[in-house]
Length: 367
Image (cartoon, rainbow, N blue to C red):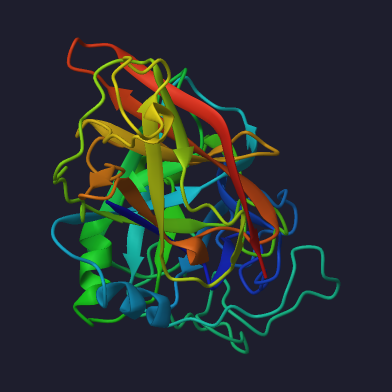
């Protein structure tokens, strides 16, 4: 199996109530609807005696480098899927259930170097009105999609949605394979835009606020796409297969420190009986390696935060086997450098028992 992570190369939030402002360097991405009951169209001068009520839509653009995507194409095999991962920083006025849309952007845009707090506001990159530096009241998105204030991005018919229930995690983890397929076909990679559905955005009384960590957040939670495919192979050769939990599992070749940017490292697994059957032999019974069952999987956890970086997946984190040992491949350039990670192993035995191994199999990724 293989899991390959790509961090975002650019992102920015778009604000309908500050339509010329660039926020390319903000640490937070906003996906919110905070409409008043009587929204203001910015292209129509308000009546002086009326209060300045307004629409307040906030959408976020995220781009992933085509160079990184092309690199995956060189070793991606078989069936595959791609998920977008965004990590929630703050939420306001959540309902028991809601949904988000992830749309494929159709126009090229420039990230810029602005922040929401800049005074005067920075206008050297993408904004609600414009794909680049804003200089005129004319919107230059090719096919703007908006409520009242013209602009707000432009996108294709390619999209994905994620629904959230009352007890669900509020982090975004959504399958965007259809969008990634378009990028791989070379039809243009301008990233994605994350927004609320039109029915929510077009409601003058809607109020729901979501903030996610951006690529400039300086945490371990930047926007990420996670490419998964099954490259597992299982052939035990002369190895016996374990059939109970009385087994000691270690990593045979863990060097403990790995350089960020390493494309792939093959971790080999030593699995031996904890209480071997006594037989006459000239070698130690405690060094006899066995194979994990074919229904075995690996996962990766951040040691400090205990967050699951890569969770167990019966389709895409399968453990392979050859005549030497069980093994799995790890792509180090999809991990945050200067952090410690722990490998977890789970085996589903034939009797239905699920056995998870946490033996402090730890390594560090360095710059």
